[in-house]
Length: 148
Image (cartoon, one colour):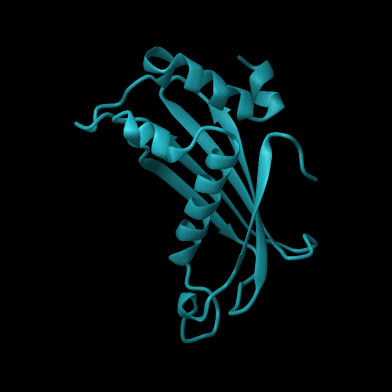
C-alpha cells in the first residue's frame, strides 16, 4: 500500500473533536488533513517553515472530502498523504484516512494549494525557487511525473 512518495501520519481522536452524537465533527477533518500535510512536507524535505521564512504562504484553494465511516473518540487513525500533482502555480494533495490496522477506509480527501507572496499574489515556485520546486515535483505520484 505504501510507496516512497507517501507518508503515513498517525493520531488519536480527542474527545473535544467529537459532537453530541459522539462522532468527529466534520470541521475537524480539515485539521487532520493539515496535520498530515505538514508532517508529509517536513518528512519529504520541503517544510512549511522554509517557505514562510522565505516570504511565501501556502493557502488552500480547494478542499474535497468524502466521508466513508465515522470516527469516534479514542479511535487511532492513520492518514496516508501524497502529493498527487505539481503544476507551475498549483499543487495537489490526496489523503486516505484508515483505522489503525489500515483495514477500513474511513475518509478520502483532496486539497489544492498555491504559493503566494506577502501581498497574496500567486507566484511560480518553479521560477523563484527551482530547487524546492524540483523537490516537490519529485515527491509527486509517479503517474503524474510521466505526464510532464
